[in-house]
Image (cartoon, rainbow, N blue to C red):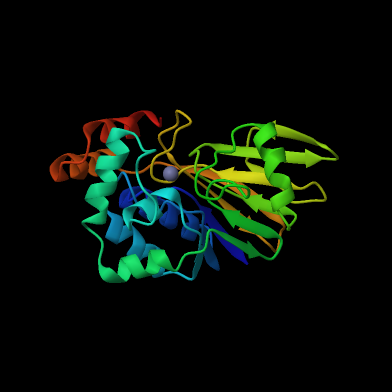
Length: 241
Ligand code: ZN
């Protein structure tokens, strides 16, 4: 069984399509595990929702998903993010809205907990340091946790009472050490690598592999410009930040 784990697609259909093509190129995908923020920022909210829903998948809600359907307010968003949220909310069908409303904030799948921000604060909290990872540990009831929100591939490994932040390796074998893993962002990476980031968990070989894939960034940027989305959001895709 191969599980494609993605986070922060952010209405970037070119990036999401490239990720799916790459993931399927190496074998069948049993299920997509999506860690939220399917929409927001980018030009193709409906296309990304549709593409995700065409596949067997499990998904949790992100802050941008909930903001676009008016479930949380955008007062904590910066100006560009709020403008893009406004635009996104005007480009969703009733079916899209119902789908997002149905998404849980947290989901346990076998040995994994799926969440957007953190297990302690699924909507808003960023996990960027071992201190934040340790604060979330009491809220994780599985061995491992998969999260997004920061758009940065990351690994927090727990050993006894300690937590170590490690660069996400190309291959990881889940073992007795619990961890929190961020697969990085698909549609708006922020680790200065503009390529889409994702991981694949193979439950048969018990391995998690990290991948980066190039996509047609200029195609996404041109759509954003044409649709009047903030230019700063288009520009940042070139730099992966
Ligand atoms: Zn996001």
